[in-house]
Length: 272
Ligand code: ATR
Image (cartoon, rainbow, N blue to C red; front, side, top):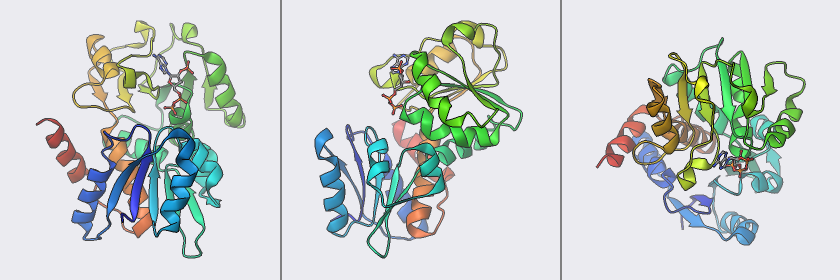
């Protein structure tokens, strides 16, 4: 039996088992890491069975992150603030600790790429679980985060949690025409269906950088759109994926694996 696992639906294309295989090889810490496709109504049962049968750690991906939040016995501060869990650790007393490493995975990748600075103005597009998981870590790092979403009401609802922070706000799409940002982050799920969130082309200034939290082999639809608009610096979410996995590995094993060689291996494998 695998002692570590990723749960999701869909899960077939998850890179997490490969990433953790590479971390295990690099650190010399053996851990068997599998994947499980879970029907939407069977997730709680599958999670509990996994840990009852000796599982030690799980990653959780779409669409179960918010539900896992309610199933954990304890939460790290960042999971509690995100309202979602992407990493679960079984503790020595048998209780489940929920963590969220998405935000730190994103911020560390943006830093690696030199796309995020303390004076950056960031436009975060999307108001679902993906945006919620990263908005606070972003706001903790840069000067201003503006949230926008196709359904503006959801953006307003999301930032209501953060009314005490004066560097997080929300703007509807049709108020973005006169705005300028240093970085635009796509946190929508549009790419899964090959779509692009509709944004005013005026946002694409000569200096703007774009980051897609989604990734796929080749350019994502959002990155392809950005390049068509003339954006010079774009990146997809593969680095974030490896980053969040590295912080999960740290939680489970107390060792932080090297991100860059794993990212390079994945990129090389994707291009073949
Ligand atoms: P996740 O947990 O991945 O964030 P979600 O909670 O279903 O998933 O949220 C999906 C997000 O992607 C939402 O912000 C959604 O916009 P709406 O709130 O208007 O539905 C956004 N999204 C999905 N498809 C989109 C599209 N084609 N264009 C723009 N936004 C899209």
